[in-house]
Image 1 (cartoon, rainbow, N blue to C red):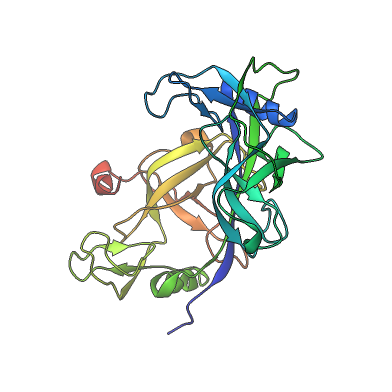
Image 2 (image 1 turned 30 degrees about the vertical axis):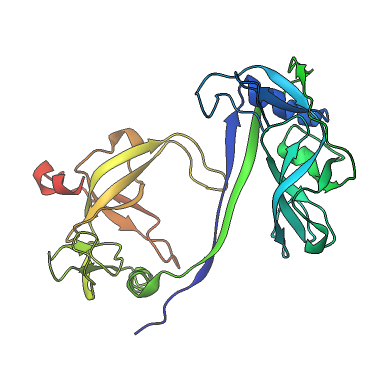
Length: 314
């Protein structure tokens, strides 16, 4: 049996969103060293602010400024910070109810050790030296001896040059181990073959294999070579260029039912204008030298498959 594969994998993309008036005022306020919450109909002040009351679903627009000092309501110690976390040294994750607020804000507390942290301790905001209108404008919280105050004041939410949108990088680092079935599948792809596994109960062939039948729930071990040709079952036209992907838009991504398989896999379609791709198009893989998987699929020149031949795989 070949060795089970394992490799580090990174999933990373920028998450972009526009801001409504409440979130815009909150983030712009942070840039200006001002913390804003939103007042509900029953007089509570929510920090961070939300656009709708979580209890009544009432739309909320009345902004209130709260203090930059507050009280820790709960905490957890982080002895080993990870990449891109707010502090490079060990710190505490804390929920802080700022003076004048009725809810707690999640952030980090710079403390020498867990023995220096406790529920009920008083803290204050340490502002970042460079601020852009993001939650990271609060560099962290730090211990601060002071009396608690309970007042908040109305605020118009108006600032010069308001923040109207944010881009947040999302990243997930992990080690992927595909297991026996997918390791065999990937090893076969390196030999320019496509291998699935047949369910001993329903006799369907699944590609890529998962080691068990998704319908019957029984283990699959019988390997079946499928393709290499197949049929386009459904597809979409991609018009937005992905970062670090050297493919010009528009292009087509499709589900392809390989001959002999009972599950469609997805791949890019090339060798044909994007507006000529269609359901039923017969395609074959195109390999590049040294690649472990097909670069794309192209038309074979065969007549289109009859709809009844692939309708169960839509």
